[in-house]
Length: 204
Image (cartoon, rainbow, N blue to C red):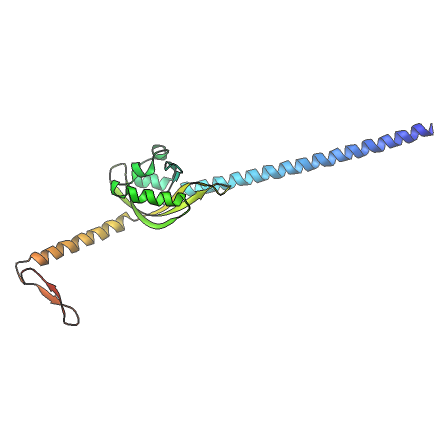
């Protein structure tokens, strides 16, 4: 009888320890699962907030994948160019949206960014849906994934169309004045502050 009681007590202790062990293991698994769920939720929230920030930014933001096709096109870019995100996505950026005379240079800048060599403050000319030209001052930044592999390029731009048009208008006016002076039917000449001649038109 004593032997049976001792065996019974020993068995009960083993069962209790086993149950406690399983309970602790189950609790740890639940904690780990909850922690993982929280991390995933936090990552999702961060990604969602970043997406909203890009989409609603007051600056044009666009991007390409490693093949040069558009995979980023925020609302400001759509507003400036007239092309919606759906119209722009998966299109080759350079041949579709960049004016012909700059395509080679822009392609080189994008290729450099895909190799990790970024470019700042480059002025490019975007062709709009209405066939107008918008001047954008762009920073081309290399885009990487979680494993630090290059997956594309992001361009954050500033629309400088009004300023560029003004500069071109001033340059055109200066050119016209130069022609006017040179071809005037009266002698026109001038000197600098040291008394040296710095103007001498054809009639002179």
